[in-house]
Length: 134
Image (tube, rainbow, N blue to C red; front, side):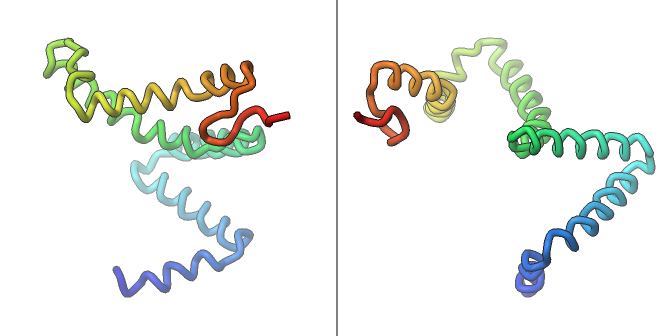
């Protein structure tokens, strides 16, 4: 579909007030067409309202959607790995790639707490965000 890239890129120029009704119609048709179930339309409406409320509350709905899509795949893979390693979770840390990923995950999760500690001691954050110098 490489020759069609220019045509697809033109969609970005269409104003949102014209594009959104078309997208909504395709979403409704697509969700109903998968299983011909009105329950799917209720689920679509529920998550549409949830996304709207999240956006109004100042939250991005993208992480929620990403988590709902990737979450089940991650659980299945984690379960397979746990069965493969016979419940020994130390192997998740002993391999170089998985150990590196675990370290990065720990740093990402601990970073907000670390920034608060640095701000309390009036130390500027290494990333440049933090307490301003007096």
